[in-house]
Length: 113
Image (cartoon, rainbow, N blue to C red; front, side):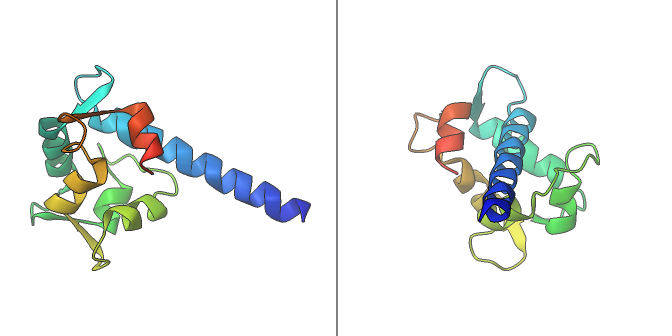
């Protein structure tokens, strides 16, 4: 039905926008690639209570307390063991840089979604 198709298209657009924002936020040197050191620094920035894991609340208000719009799906995609927290290894693994010569481009990050 037409309403359902429009809703699915909107949801997909929001997901794509959130992935792009996530990439931009993590690409600290803005060179178009994300490397391990940037991922680790982004994790530390998001882990505001410094407990070694990122809660949904922390994730929804990262960075600089700015919300990622509708990032619930991205959070749960990163939380691979589904315990309600993103640990450092899950966060690093979500970028899949180890199989990509130690860096990932926006295009590769979007395809990996």
